[in-house]
Image (cartoon, rainbow, N blue to C red; front, side, top):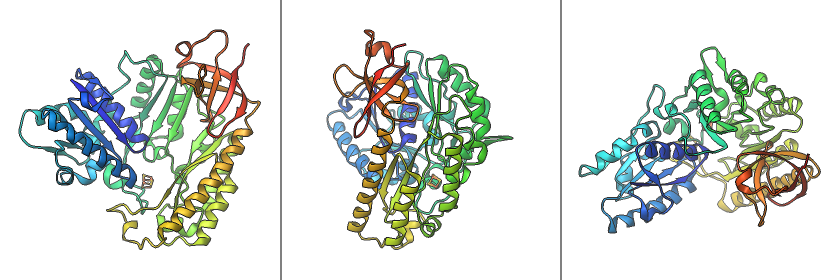
Length: 441
Ligand code: SF4
């Protein structure tokens, strides 16, 4: 039996899709990237971004056509959208057989078999108020050697930002025991993983008993063989001084952070319900830079939020310059059904939102270019991941998150280097990556 999974959304969805593949692979399925070969075809979609859901709808339409030739193919929708829409998906997308929300992935194979053996569709939504089952699946299959892995440490969010549907679709916060996280990381490291990214909707709000997020970072830093530790997405309100001082102090914690700010206007931050102001954010940035001067800070920005005036937007541009972000995911605001913000007047015209987004892109791109240029001549440690941009090159990420392409020396091939750390001297900065040469010792 073959499984096809298509993912639309954030890193959390990408991670969940991997978990789903692991669950099916443990049940004897093999994976396919060709939906025509699939016995089970799943769409995993985020509902936070309107665009992701629209793409998912058209992909589901394509998959449903498969059923014309092969009625035994099971087509399913999973992810936040499954939690939010539930059985409504069957009306919206006829031909879908199964709808399963994130807390029930552990039962997916069973549910697919149930649908196969009976007439009619099946939806399973709602939250597992204890520890969601997919927390409990540890490690990659022994046959799959990968150098990087994601580890979920918490689920859900109680922050209730006005524009965000996550608290509704991912439920209340549930935090995994520190010893479970440590044991999963140890098992990944013994399977060849050298870089772990901790995942959670509000990852740095992690707390279990007496242990907070900084304690978890310290605990994982002591795992022998774990060379790199990252986390996403933190909330500025929970960047306590013990977390900021972990940068530069903990050997494995990489010199990069994605810290969503969303707006540079205190008025808009308050309307968004973010519960911090620009001054709080800048204090966190100052602490991070004090602890680790070379840290790369990227962010998320929303433009055209209801009520955002030209002056508010100018404050966002000023904040971008003041922080010197090295990258950003920026979006035009679009109301998501079921959120508090959807009840506000979406009063920034579409062409003005587009203009503001372009202005943000230009500003961020210019900062990115400057940041990349500043690295020329530096020596960076690269974790090799794949073939590079040009023939003969290999590619990987530096600890600060930058992609570096370089030609390996002393006859090394991509097969020799994938999953290994290599020291590279940066010789040029390009628009989206760096170019380097291996340092020969
Ligand atoms: S912190 Fe805010 S934006 Fe992030 S998941 Fe929670 S509610 Fe959504």
